Amino acid sequence: MLSDMSDAALSESDEQLRSVKEAIAYLSSVDLSRRDSETGSRVGHAVFNLVRDGYSRNRMLIAGEKTQICRGRVGASGRPFAKVSELWYPPAKSVRLNRANLPGECVFYSGTSRATAIAELKPKLGDLITLFEGRAAKETVRIKIVDYGDYFATAHLTERHRLFEQFTSKIFRKTITSQRHYMISAAIVSLLLRYDDALDGVMYSSVASDLVGANVVYRPSFADAFIKPFWFRAVRVDQYHHPFDLKVTCTHGASSSSADGAIEWNEITSCPGHPISADIYSKPSVRKKITFSSE
Image (cartoon, rainbow, N blue to C red; front, side, top):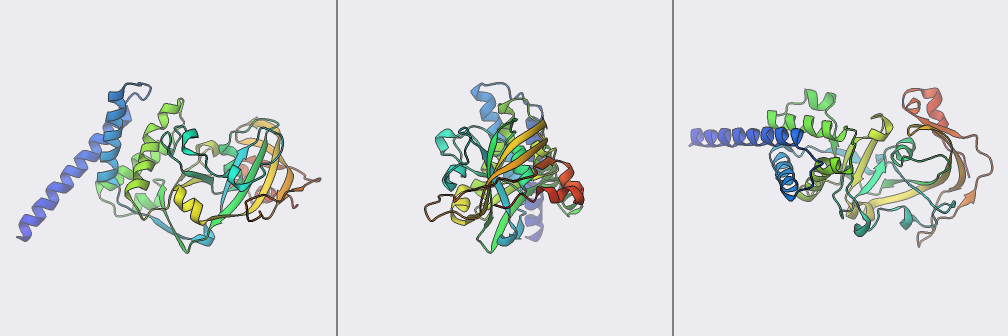
């Protein structure tokens, strides 16, 4: 009986490994610029098999008080946004395909630092950006890390699980040339959040910050229930060299919002400016400059 069970398990494992390899082979070669329904259907089927047979349900457990995040939005009026709701995720009808969401699918995007949040907005010279920092009011947050670094390279993973980690890391670190190239990564996140009920969010390297920063996307129900803003700042882009080499100046600040979400802004009249580049992640003397001006 034990022998029969072992043979069955081995057969199932072999079939799952084959499924993962076939999914990766297809997803690595598919032409995502094609807009026919057959291609879309095959991509969806391949991603489903990849997640079903390759995801080991590994998660990082983080204390809620350690989950400090930053989120921002570029305004069009030249004034900071007035309410927290204007800085939250948009309604489903406005959501387009992006790196971690399918069209019409809401997720709460955030950066793990102010610099990353700014870089992800791809701002232009003169833009006014409204930022807020927050953290999760939950004892433990469960995050899936998408990054085949030292941990996954040395962890005792089966081959199918290792292949999944390697492929997803590669996909999320890819610079895209068309919005449709987000299809695979978006479908992966959609399935992770849909079929792993214990998962609160997914963390991956930020391409906009030249992979030195990280983003976290939370499921909207988690963000609504647990993300609590505690710091607000409006900054203007005063110098611009390229998307991750710029300088911002603080124009307004706030440390709280009212019960209805109104942000209680104070004007900042003196700010030396803050360089935003990869340097702030690697040089302690420069990193201090991202400590934004007080109100």
